[in-house]
Image (cartoon, rainbow, N blue to C red; front, side):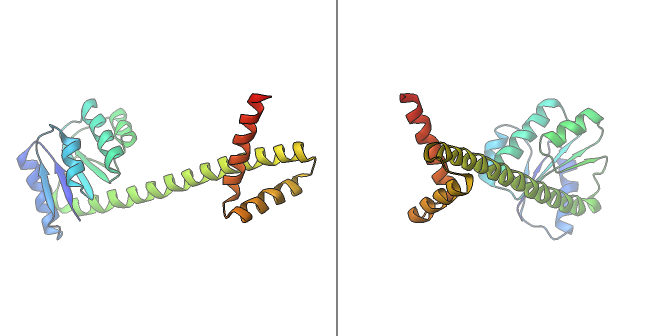
Length: 193
């Protein structure tokens, strides 16, 4: 597992690195400057990002959001002090673990594990939501296509669905794809009437 540590304080970064090495982690990269951070992280392609900040500022949280969105990797953030608003901003930015006053080398491995597990759980929920949205959109398209067939062929819903299914099977396509083509054709033909 490749781990990137972002910290401008060499002493604080050493604590994180020591905790990781004691836990058996060896592929560790320290990034101390923030210049072109996203580009450097993208090139590095870490599995996990650990960010250590004394007191996170808004621009640093926005940077964490950009990193999270671009890399789609777990991010754990260690801070010395915080407030409710900052915690919310960190979570919104995609931080998987937000640890206040918890920079102890003995805790680094458990925080890393937590960040990975929370990231994976969130990713699964997001994927399930995306699949549900896609399925709902496909069902709406199929319903529109059935309505077009029912109106044009003067048939019932069952017959309209059977026609869609047959066209899909005959063409080796998904019903949703056939329905989308029919809805698009109806829209194009409807504009010319």
